[in-house]
Image (cartoon, rainbow, N blue to C red; front, side, top):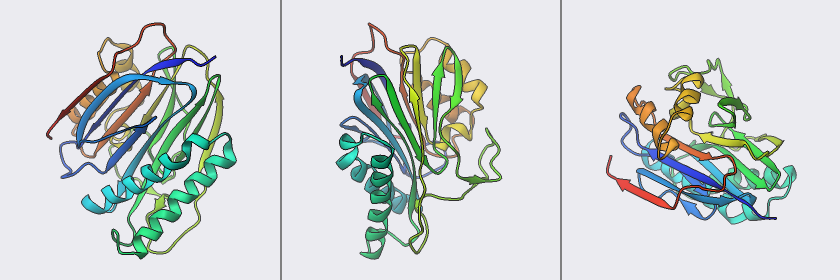
Length: 256
């Protein structure tokens, strides 16, 4: 039987960058503003959420993340297993290079990606790069994604180098997505985020913030990252545990 869960999103340009190169997709809902939050409900009988964190600087990073999200949006509804996820990500990777070679954006532009697809009682989490997915279980965080970084220090404020991404090089390189299937129990939630959150806020602090009362926990985390310096764009998507009462749809926009 189809069920749904509360979902909260937030994206913010941060305090340093000129533009927001992050982009999220939740079902058919896509971020539309550089500073935005949204809440509603989503089905877990084949629902999905994805974050792309563009690289390449301003326009090129924005182009890269949009190509990735729009390509994913075209096929994610058909995803049923790990092979489908791999094909979908490889297609987005290929589309980035096609855009580079056609003059849309500069060579070397790229994007990380993290996402989850729900199948009622199971879910597939996938990522390439350093955007992360966590399982939320009774106040505890368990990282489901795998960081593609050199010298990564969990919770470190920047300074890590990517070992793979979608695009990101002048010539095509193979990409190997990390994919994990897990059981989606009623009390389990999922957190997706770009590294603009995890580079600024330690995991124990994230868990503590999520344990407190707030209207939009995703917006609460984005605010914490900005309060810590906001060195990068910040995007957060939280799919909460199954509940009989959840938020009504609310979308707010503002200028940076």
